[in-house]
Amino acid sequence: MNGFRFLRRGHLANFLATTALGLSVATLSILGPGIAAAQGAGAIKDPERARYYDIYKDKRVVFVPVFMGLDLTEGWSEVMSQQAKRLGYQYEVRNANFDTSAGVQILTQLLNENPKPNVVVIQNPDVTSYAKIEKKLEEAGIYVIQLNMKSLTMTTGFAGADATVIGETQAQWVVDQCGPSTSQKIMILNGPTTAPWTVYMQEGYNNILDKHPDVKVVARQSVGNYESSKAKSITEVTLKQHPDLCAIMGVWDIPDLATAAAVKDAGKTGKILVSTSGGGGEVACKGLKSGGFDHYVSYDVPGQSRDVNDLIQMAMQSPEKPGKLKVALYTPLFVYTQKDAESHQCWSVDTLHQ
Image (tube, rainbow, N blue to C red; front, side, top):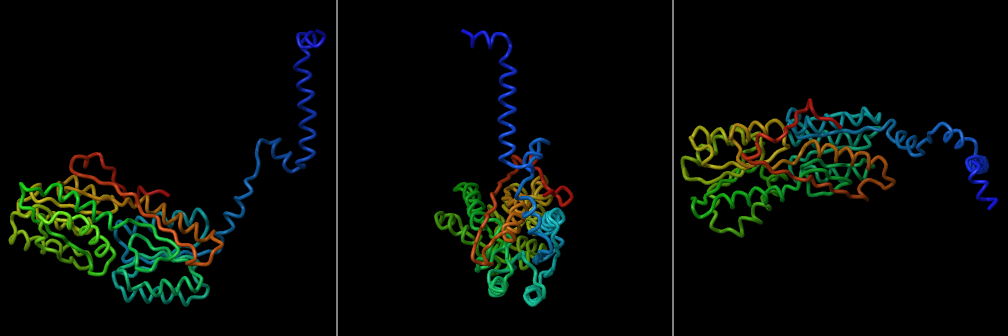
């Protein structure tokens, strides 16, 4: 009863305050003055931050693209550059300029430099030309990250689209459109013969088309180094030979703008369907909204850029030697058609942010 009166008389608050003060003094004496001061100010230092930012000091990353000046390479490079500025490491581009021998020479120079770069990001022109030197770079202590176009050699990291799945996605859509009520004739436009975007994508095409023997590939040709003029001329010739063609599967959106132009010139837009793929930038919107592209598989350059930046950070933080840890990040794909062309948000280099 006395205890009840104690509570009722308002002494509870004083009792709790006194008890809390005693506990606080005891706790602070255990934790020490540094933590006590931080808690008193309402803040605690993140113990990981200093180590995290120190890792990037005096580090260097080099990007070796097939060719700069494209929406893909400019987009990737912009976001990689943004991260380099934020974290304080050096970033540079060595452009192979659509010359494989020049690319090999650039990679050889990087291998022999002193000091060597810490990370080299490589866009492979084909599946074999850089494979051996990529292995040598990692043996020399340089982390190699491959971007979107992968060689036959897996290195520390790969960020990019699964070209086989792109091929399957395109082929399945074309098969669905080119049923028995159509000619069931299709054309395939490839890139360079041994390019990842040809050989891996071709596997995807075959995975679907082999199940549908009624769909006939009446032409399968290379547009060289993704050349618009070749894409257009090949399409023009094929349309004269097969005016009842049902669909075209193209290798990449930039040359396929020319493919679509040839279809338009023949008065066949919307009748002969064009399926292509790309990074989902302004070229995608141009092709879709003009009616040139009927089906588009996007591998999302902004997302890929984030992934390659994550792999760069992973490589610099890794305690493992280059090549011991191997991480692949295949890009989620997005599919667009004429039905959702207006709602598709296309990126440009100016709108890219890390």
